[in-house]
Length: 197
Figure: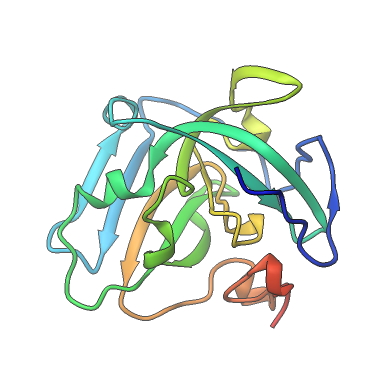
């Protein structure tokens, strides 16, 4: 096990602070779905029931928020990004994604851009449940992104961790997402302190 590394400008916390913009999404299973689209041969839409039946991964991921807190050693259970990637056939030269989530009633109102190559391991998960040293396994609560939230690898600030996820758009060229449009870093590596452009 590697020693935890605190990125520059961060402080360690054992809490999981709740930060978000807009309203907390209210989940309705009968109307919820998850879309895979963009530079793919054929779009795919999954119901909640289809999503929760996909193979699951448990992984421990460190979280680093641009607001300067870092939380080490949180375990998550969810669907690895690579499992969803298996469901689509990409066009040539797809190297980026936007991961979308609900914002103010718009299912695609929030998005975060990420490089595809960074999302193929156990540390890029669409999560249902979590635990840490002080908490046993529990479902995400609505403010943390229930019913499904993306948790990015520790090499990205946590704003790349879209709450209330609704889909993935596959792209050939990188595009700014919600916070990136407001001046936040495109690449968002906490170990390089890439907070803003």
